[in-house]
Image (cartoon, rainbow, N blue to C red):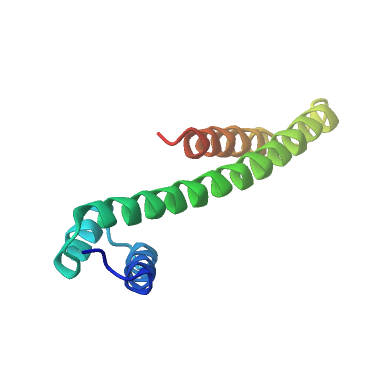
Length: 114
């Protein structure tokens, strides 16, 4: 006997709510298993929740890469513009480049799902 579709939708919504509150995937699975009799339904719901989680990470990765690239370009322009200036602090020149490359790498990690 299968569960009505509205029960699956309510389980999916509850799983998404738990994911947004910071509960890890294994605890979400255990909680949903306690509320449903069919493990195949829970597997389908968990697949949807994982896809949602990784889609959110990929979108965050794209944003981080864009911000990092802008910082890298700004840092490059700053280095070129101030390289002969005696008043320019070396830290002020290189900080945008270092932050930009770090954000690009962080974005790649999120994009690749490591």
